Length: 571
Image (cartoon, rainbow, N blue to C red; front, side, top):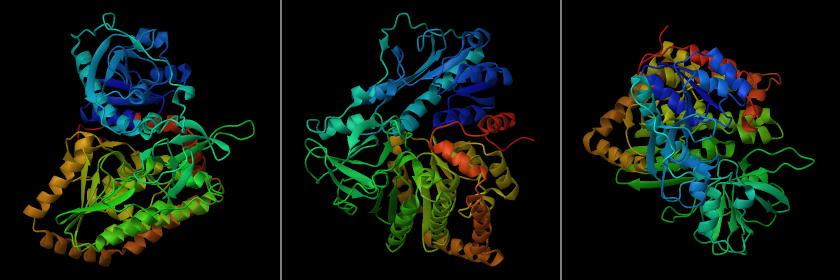
């Protein structure tokens, strides 16, 4: 069918739905709409058999509903209604939840149900992680079933008249407010995790109003409730009534004299306000305390786990991960696995930290150089096998970090964006070496030019991935550990490592890595230090959640592409 996706943003769920529909042979167009006029324009611009809204914050107009069947993805079970469904689920500690695909009608979330899918809410998972994991998996199952039912022409959606309606209001900041004097750690974490990516929890801290983003339990530090006890790797530790929590990011609130801020590492956002607050080291691996980088071993397999908010990697984070990687290389293991247990692998350089820097061009340069240093270290590891384990999405330089490994293992729900064009960049991280060696020069150029998201299955078919693991988000880490152990048991690892070393030497003789790096960085430097380069406006719009310049035109290009089911692009 011809299917139009309408969304308020081409976010992770919309991209996943796009890739899954494309893989099944549908012709899919995308329209980003932040109001009714933009939505009408998208519908008129892309004639379709069916309209699907994976993530839409505006109502679908009556005239559009009169002309098209419009299916809306609601992140709640049948009968649930309201704009803060997932927030309420976490805020109230729900253990079971679901996603409903319903037909758009006059009353929001009240239309007949085309499909739904249930899931268990994992303990301790924050909203954004849950959204990109269990929610997205359930949404895809429900959307594909709804599309199949619609396409059959024989299935009738089920009215919600016989369902008990649970109408939940918008979850306000007043309802989210934390009382640091009385609330225990578990309650504080539940509140933080229900708002971690957006909107955050509004609070007063060190004489200023902030939105708090994210939360992790601390196992030892204690102090006066509400007090900032320590910092670690950009996060702050704040005392609760019975313990403490780590808060990774802050966003300054709008005031009468200042515009709203952008999400930043908490210690960076509070720069100049943390006098006397100690920086504490990362905990030993046997402790359960929070750390964004952790190394463990199981037999001959080492696991270098890293998890940065939003998948963004600042200069400082890249350098810390590089140090951790070098330490891991000193360990006597045959296989080294890189990646987190859940959620994002990496999205490359940290655009928020760059935007907030006194000199964004200089910080852009420092960040890309640090990212290149990390990727080079992986590429030049010739004494063991390196596996990139993608529990979730990877984009731009983060995708190239994965491709620097010997093997790429993806969860089947991961989406890859192996390109830089949407941010107005040529790209670095040795992509001119790693991408062509994986897919060939012609396909590498197509991937960069078309800038289309890829499902894990399509990445496997193109050669960007080596294995796809069809497991739930919470099962990925265990599946990767079992598979790595199996590689050690059933593979002649020394022989593979020897072949790898010989191939790297041949490639180096043909064209040194330094030459790839120099050419890529020359182009990046020219962009970073050109005040009128589109990159600067695109970066600012992205981190400030404003419409991206040229986004509509870019999605129109994407919509004109024709994809072969689970293959490459058609001419």
